[in-house]
Length: 270
View 1 (cartoon, rainbow, N blue to C red):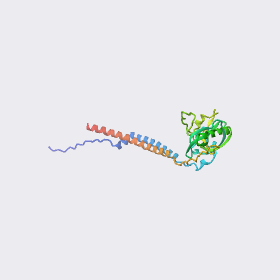
View 2 (cartoon, rainbow, N blue to C red; view 1 turned 45 degrees about the vertical axis):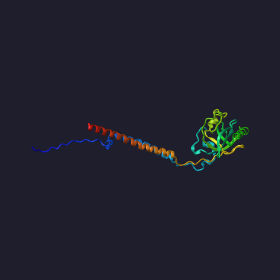
View 3 (cartoon, helix red, strand yellow; view 1 turned 180 degrees about the vertical axis):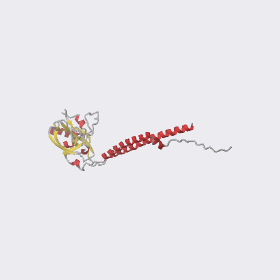
View 4 (cartoon, rainbow, N blue to C red; view 1 turned 90 degrees about the horizontal axis):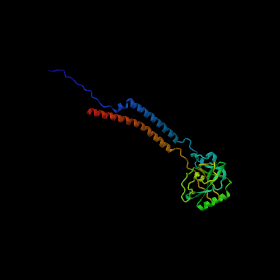
């Protein structure tokens, strides 16, 4: 018996493609969130780039212009970067009993000592001054004693470079009053008449040394560059973070796609 052949069609199912998964509303929403996050990171990167390039660099040689100390820094303030090493001039009176020695001071490569003093610039503020350099401790002690006898309590006009505090250090056990860092905070611990006293955070390295001491060699600071490479590095980091936001979206969507493909294959084999 012959008859018309019957054609049987079967519907074949296929797993979703990665593109289909990514175009689902859920993953489009995640993509939009990644766009917002990347936009924030891009803004931060642009901000860092703007800070990296100094459009108004400090004029060359400005640190060599002698300026009043009060125009450069105030008591208790940190020294602003453009004024590190700035030549300044100030007037005040030496406080008796506060000519102290700081070791490990180098002058043209030779190690020695600084004689320092407390200069009272007004009734309630003082600045630490490195007065001069000596090659050995005996000479430094002799110069400090001479200053105590001749200069303590007298008025003085000091010209020098204002330099940032070197930070305190632990004194040796055999001499708890010894100092090997030029730190106004450490000097303050040994100064007299400091009640309600405001102290400058930086110190002043005098240009001219008194008799018995050598002038402190204090060259002009290096000129600051117009590009801050640290900020450029931060800007690159923000760009990487922005790209990583898209990578996270891609990785999550792909993980979901791989999970569905694996489930489909398991169902088909069953």
